[in-house]
Structures are given as structure tokens and as C-alpha cells.
Length: 99
Image (cartoon, rainbow, N blue to C red; front, top):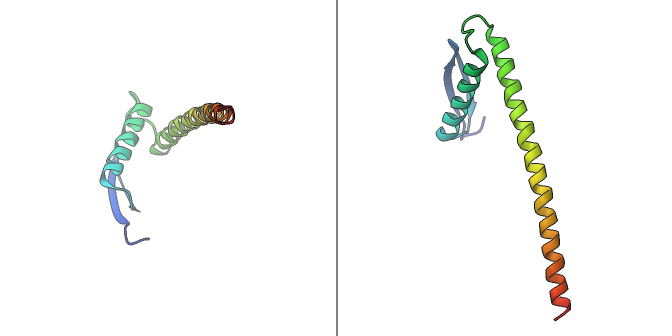
């Protein structure tokens, strides 16, 4: 544990969890809000009938799905940006050589 980390506790589905983190309060609020909304989304109308472990797995799969989609979008953006930068470099080089 680093000097910047602190113990954080939060409650979810009637269970308390604690861990050490160096994340800011804003980051933690965003994370907790996302996790709670995904958990509620995965519970749907079956609150109390699904085991906590199954709800957690469903939420993890949802997060992983979002991560994979964002990674693909980023890779596509990066390829497009690199292609555009290459074209700009070619145009600049052409202009410099032909002046």
C-alpha cells in the first residue's frame, strides 16, 4: 500500500466491501455509480432471487463488453488519425520540396 492509498468502504446488495485505493473521490463516485447502475440493470425485476455472485458476474461481463467495444473504437480512431497524419506529412513534404 502506498502513502496515497486509503481504506474505502461501500455497501452493495446488502454486503459491505472494503479495499485500499489511491483513486480520488470523484473517480470513486463515478465507479460506484456505474457499478450500482450495472448491478441494478442485471438484477432487473428479480431483486433478491439471483445470487450475488451471479449478479456480479453479469455486471463484470457487461463492463468487459463495454471495454472491448471502446477498445475497438479507440483502435479504429487511432488508425484513422495515423492515416490522416501520414497524408498531412506527405503533403507538407511535397510542398517543402517543391518550393
